[in-house]
Length: 353
Image (cartoon, rainbow, N blue to C red; front, side):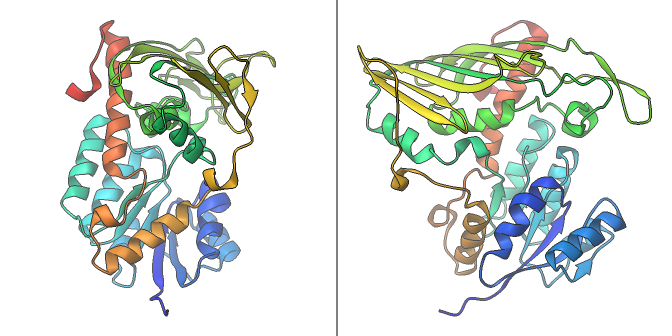
């Protein structure tokens, strides 16, 4: 069957676009990236040369309003995501927004409202890699009640990503990242998809390295937490605890691990490595996950397939993508709840925000 070529423009083409999105799109039939707009002319020229993109556009608004584009990939830092995504949808373009969704809950609500006003258009946020490749297996284990009633969930993300004091990553700068904290948002999406959202949570945050020197020897105040502890109850009734630590200096404790305890068994997932499962009374054993219960990185294909379905007039329910802006809004409620709880020393119910 002959398919119409999907024509795509890029606004911001950083590392993940180079490593994932542009190669992923290049591997698809009848998909063409025709224009790129980057922070500088020189970086745009490099991207265009490396990926055979025919046009470089200086102004992102001009790119969005081009009549020859079907969709736009937004790969900028979070501080521009809301403005660009809303403008993209209002210009009649299908929109793929790089993670994290945006700066704060207010922007997330604006993005979700804009998407709801354009049901004929696809809206998608880049899914977290933590959901791949074993999400189908984890969801089957939970759906089939193999763990029994889930009683407790524990998530630990420990690394030394925020230790350096002689450089400042853009993710550490509140003016670019807003209320996003380390990988907390990535795992918020993952937990929402697997065990559901929080009914209520309490959070504590700390920023022990409160200033750093940038490349120009300027002293930069750091306002994004480097340590976060979250406790609470999920909507399912299970208790949950999270520890996010970006300033671990040793080589023994760094880890990213999710543990789910149920009345009939326990699941332990070392992200990017192994899944272990134990039935009641038994030891944890590494699981060899069948290929049919794995789902590798298919992000670009999923988006393009949804765009094609939309062009055929199919409804949003018939062309689902995950996460879309509504799922993003759900995790941004949690992000907001964490900040409010840490600031007020009170428990917060995300659904009420």
